[in-house]
Length: 350
Image (cartoon, rainbow, N blue to C red; front, side, top):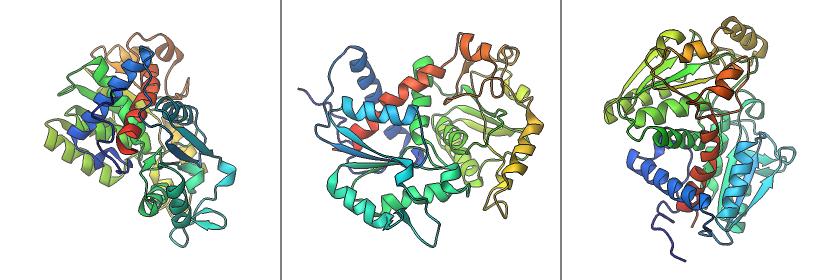
């Protein structure tokens, strides 16, 4: 069996945030993902990680994330250990850092490092007590103590695996993304949602030189560090970045639109004194008109519709857009989760 050159290219590196990788390195991951996708379609076996073990901590459940990782590591010749939510204790930061009720993350990370080859963690929302940044700090603590690579399967600040799948789908649709208008927009949902997807999407789109418009009502601002990072990416890679409070205006002439719900951070610590779920929900309910319709899609430049899934039908988007819009990348993005994550594992785990 001929082993591709990309296997082990980033051996031992953590994958916590796409900003930790250069544009060239992200492109290398995407090239590997495309190669793995082609081989998957052609039924070519890719046992590049024989006998490797991935430990997966799921503080939050998931359809796409769990199944794409489990299928992915199996297709690479390895296997996954699923650590169920009821087995995992949510840390109280910064006083203690524990994974189980009786064990510190520092202990768990070092023990599992001697049993396998990578650790993946998913934690946000209720699991992170709705304190923005808490989930990310938990993953950073795993990375601090583990002797094997740590993968972020989504926390309350970043979703780098989704960002890879998104930009892969975008490049498959339009190989040259430079200068394309990419809209990251708030869309209404009755439920509380983390900031991870819009933040990672804004970062990776600007990293690829796109003209990114972040659209949201007042009160739905992203973290200041994300805005700064997006502006720096735009300056470095030749794109643009701007913020708008007008969904319709942002959609006009867009090449890609990514309307996704997230919650107003002023109702959550550290921006608010306490977690005010009722206040956040009541504020969100003022913006039910932030919904993606076919009429809105018609004012774009025949834009591609994107969403990480699952989309809230009748809230974030109408059913006719989700099911019938001819330039939807919704299921392409879901499909690419498998191959993008396989690429990451193949490059960091050997």
